[in-house]
Length: 93
Image (cartoon, rainbow, N blue to C red; front, side):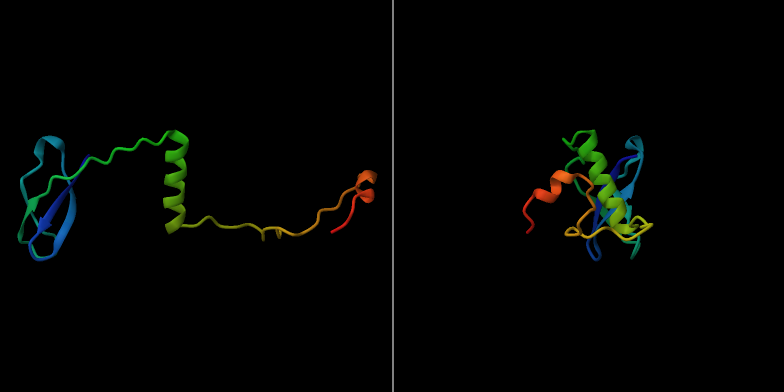
């Protein structure tokens, strides 16, 4: 269902969800129960492709409920162990 924006003279703007066939021109404010006028605003369209939209949705979700980490991450400057004999001939920093 679409989200419609209304503006109360006292409390300001708020959103309400209605069916497209039953949206009223006025709505009661949830804070003060005063009549609020419906605003005409832009549609929430996006030009993002599916992978971009998924990344945006994941970023929004993890902002409120971050993923649980099972172990600590490796440090960026930690050196891995190599067993290639050619690496021993490379200069060391």
